[in-house]
Amino acid sequence: MENNQRFTVAGTDIEEVKQKNAQFGLSYKEVLEVLAATGGTGTKQFSNTDAEEVKQQINPH
Image (tube, rainbow, N blue to C red; front, side, top):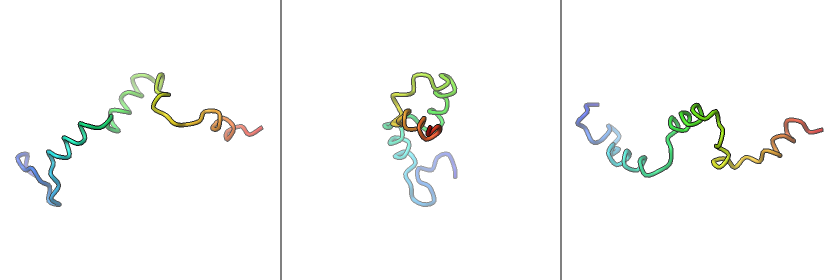
């Protein structure tokens, strides 16, 4: 695909996809970068995992 093409072979509008992606949250790569930079500290707000439930699953005693 040449740099000046707006559509993929399948007909996807590349610029539209880029615009929509920019409107939404972090990309997968950006999430990994945040996790790497913070070691996961302070990311609980982004999780819906029940920590107590996970602890029970790991150690059911």
